[in-house]
Length: 163
Image (cartoon, rainbow, N blue to C red):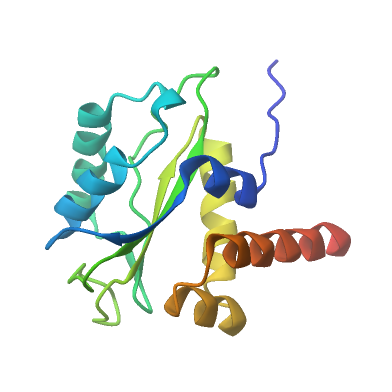
């Protein structure tokens, strides 16, 4: 039985990168641009991943409200040897993303996982962070990469102590 290594959200975002002023006038365009900004060593099939993410978007918008979207494929695209990541992208212009609260999206967490468990872990951490006013203020002002990663590491340390 394979034991899964828990990867911190901060590490996932460091791997996927934080990208500012990502061009695009639609979710598809921003996702396409964000995929092009991922590190070269991911081994991902960008066109296949884009297709899977857009298929997931067609089922139900990944816009969660408060200007945030969490695009991801329905099924984890990476095998056991793949390198999961989360790319944080700030679109150049706020976008219509069919969010429940009608807000325009200005923050995109693109999630690429290697397993359902890893995907759900990343998704729950991002969702929890996005309910914290301090973190929301940080991403709304598009703080520096260093500040965003530090805030996530601080939150993860607090979660570990609470367990």
